Length: 181
Image 1 (tube, rainbow, N blue to C red):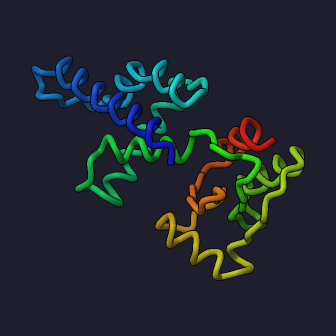
Image 2: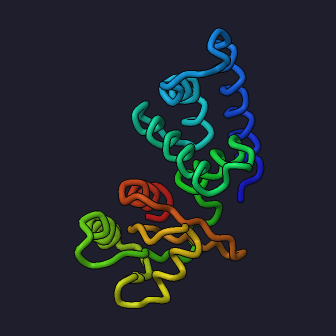
Image 3: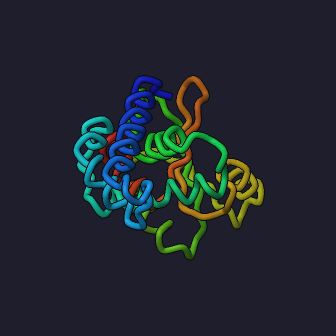
């Protein structure tokens, strides 16, 4: 994992949390639309750190998803570190894309999986296809890593054995277009 990038993202998130709390001091930081405020604050900085152009709605979605995952999987962990890890998993470029091993967890009949497979074919990228319905071990591996069998998910294994599990068909295709193609 790129520890320098993680450190920058964690600090940006903590800075945003402090600024948000200050802006909403009268309500002790309570703000039901916090993700919109955070997205406005983070949009440019996160885009620079992750080398991508975030749409505000995309950033709001990612923040809400990170919050949901944090509450479901690890509510006692530091929120800013958890969110940074979520963003790195979904958006950080690979440090060695030509050497990474790629595997797509999918199943036939899933329209989002079909979109991902079609994009992989169009790009001519070597990606191992792992159908979770045809091979129960693939499903078990996915559930063990992600806590659920939602597909498609791209498993990126770097030469040193570090793994990233990237969900969402559009994120997978964006990643493959910019990093692996």
